[in-house]
Image (cartoon, rainbow, N blue to C red):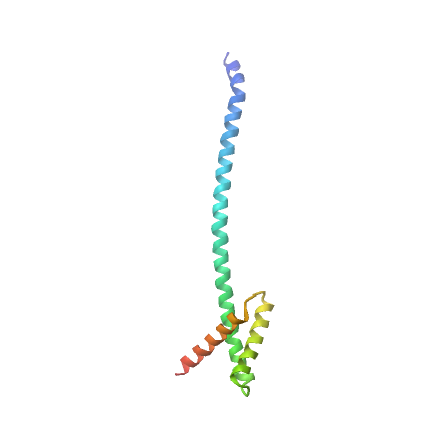
Length: 118
């Protein structure tokens, strides 16, 4: 008799276990999606920060190059040489930014240089 009850209940038990597994799987997938979203945002922020650091480093190099290698040129010509160098270096590193952003970073390096001289 016990076997008959178990056999009769087997399809119901299987359906309930399958439903529970489905709900748990859905919860796990939703949790993983939230974690993935947070990780993606963190990585994006970290990448942007690393790129900003690289942009400012290259801008400093570009400023130094213009000050030494192109010291006989006027200010605008030096800036153009620095800008050309920086854009080329950033492009080779896979960082795509506007010339205006790079110019701002070069000018920041210029201001920091002269602020420290005073």
